[in-house]
Length: 135
Image (cartoon, rainbow, N blue to C red; front, top):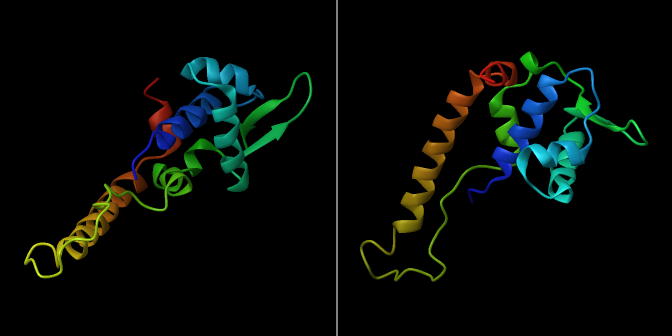
């Protein structure tokens, strides 16, 4: 399902791109987003698991990029955030005797697969550096 995780993740990474030599605190990052630092730390943990950022604890601690922004595509960020994008299915089981009901989920799955392919192709051509240069 679509959520704000991609927006949060790309906001974090864009900030880190703008301050490449600094370890930014989760409080600083959260202040930029007007968000609770706990939510920021959750996304940072995901980025650490994907080896995109490194963190340091202590008074001057925080997080910074561990890879160059020009070597990270938005497709990679998308895939770190979602398995794939989907708009969901009805909660109830459709009527298998209905000409629409018996095929709706199959056709939605094909539509979602096509959407994901198009999104991936578009995001693969944009680096984090490209995106960050807009700011």
